Amino acid sequence: MTHPSKIKGNTFERECVNKAKEKGIKAVRAYASNGKSLGLHEEVDAVIGEYKVQCKRRKRIAKWLKPPDCCDIALVREDRGNAYVVMEYDEWLDLIKRAELYLNL
Image (cartoon, rainbow, N blue to C red; front, side):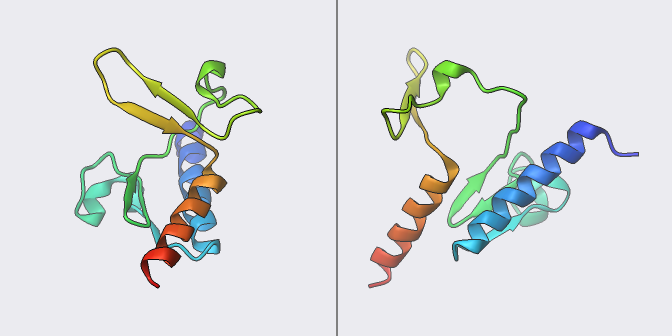
């Protein structure tokens, strides 16, 4: 029997892919959450647009990681590391869709 955490993760991956498809963005989930099924690294869970995605669902996300209500995004960086953008998934999908429309003009 499949472990509840695995079921939760698989469900989240499908939700992410389906939401992208609903917005007209090409998206595919890796079979068994293994990117090798897509010819990619095994940690890739999905490809959304041109982006390789790993989906993580947790009971709680660190509060400092989320953008405050007055901001659209949060930028985070570890010392001597790269910066990363944290934003709502729907907003990111809208950005991807606008970029696709702009580039296809």
